[in-house]
Length: 206
Image: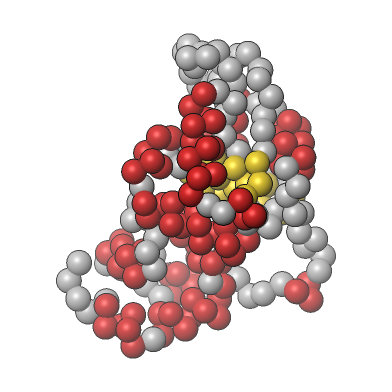
């Protein structure tokens, strides 16, 4: 597994599952064409782009290029890298019939081609042996201790946090953890949840 500095933008859940097996990175799902109307998610992608840079890795069919071009229009070019998978005819194992253009998507392409695409895009590979530059990370135990998981009102509290930070409301707990670490880091996260403004916001009704 390689650790990549940039956040990686993919189309769907199965693409993310594929990438999670080989890359340590923040991975954001566009949800297909829903990204065209999801201003909050585009804003998140912009924030990630400015913080770490992003790599767009979509399918090689027409739909994939429409999504890629839309992101390209929304994010300044200097923060965006593009990774391309080749046109390979085939069908993903989970599907009964091939896609409209008969091409394998990101989830169906072999790992070696994915890694090659990321490296060709110029992704920054992080040297994890550089312990001197590693910052303390926010862990699931931190979210538990702060009430964001494991308690009856955790879901409500996470929703308030996503609204407070202007993050997508449907973001999963794991994705939220990735985004918090990428955009804020442990120290800033603690400052946020300890500030009076946040504490007042949690007293309000949703």
